[in-house]
Length: 128
Image (cartoon, helix red, strand yellow):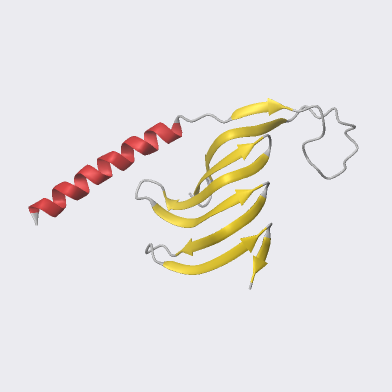
């Protein structure tokens, strides 16, 4: 019984260290010469908004969901993970983006940590 408590305590300390490190992350912002909204708006390419590039991490203040994603010049690219609780590392959704579109296997988990749905995507389209 004591061994399990020690392992859990060490695991929790490791997670807290990672959470602190991730909370200090800052996403790089790259200005683009063209409109970053991609909706064909009338900004005429003089958009002053910054575009995400690199590791992105944020927390939704209303739900507490922690999002960890990668961007490449404003486009989601690579691993994407949502957590119900980052400190306890309870994953909500895990998947991968390629060129801003969902790709491969996406798994959704319940708050108990068990997989509740698995979906496959190819170029952003769900595969049956």
